[in-house]
Picture (cartoon, rainbow, N blue to C red):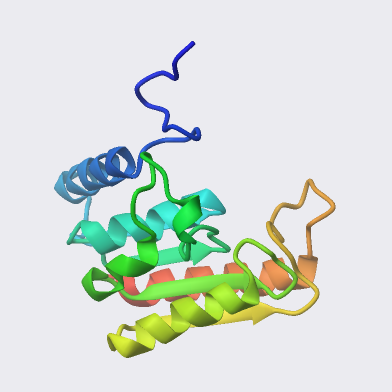
Amino acid sequence: MTSPPWRGSRGGVRDDSVVADCGAALRWLKALPLSNGKAGIIGTCSGGRHALLAASRVTGFDAVADLWGGGVVMAKEELSEARPVAPIYYTADLSAPLLGLFGNDDTHPSPAEVDLHEAELKKYGKAYEFYRYDGAGHGFFYYHTPMYRPEAAMDGWAKVFSFFSRYLKS
């Protein structure tokens, strides 16, 4: 049995498909009559990776939030037909300020991977804010799971709203 065309060789939506969909959504949002001409993108987990990937490959986003997106830094053996390039290699093309929220107890991304990502952002002079939470792992916003960390989640949401307010207001 073969995978459906929308799934990659290891499962999941292909990066090129995510980028195309996000680009189309961006154009649609900005064309709405009530739009102020600005749009942000946000994602958690693989959605955080996708948000960063889209903002690096599609121009026009005004702010991007990556909430513990794993797979930004990838080893060669993690690459696949669906994910042929690690998003960190698109850092030079990132066209929007980036907010990153990460748990220091996470393993995907690990603190070392977050460090590598931050070093690449500094190397290219990108506008970014990274916040890391001790005692928090992956998915610390998810109130319905044991991973939930209320203090980190509340602080993180405040940072998300502040960040988008700064970059997306008229």
